[in-house]
Image (cartoon, rainbow, N blue to C red):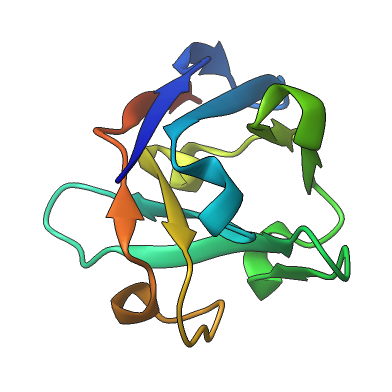
Length: 124
């Protein structure tokens, strides 16, 4: 099993920045693909960004390209999401996810493990 714990959410004004962290524990050697999803009230969970540890490939949804950066620290088993130029429409609960099986970074069904989420609220 792999446990994921997010942190770093909060309230920020539009144009501000936040850095989310996702700490992985347990059988972390089995996980080499991770991602961030978000869910706003009344909306479906949507893909934000993903990273493959081995190839160091990254993926982003169009709305965050140029504003968000996903990265990871293998030694700390931690993934980050640096969010800049935040907008009110970025307000959501952000979830960390990990995959050790067939993976399509944009599809939540291909992730095996999920954290509890951290709330990000951007005021206008």
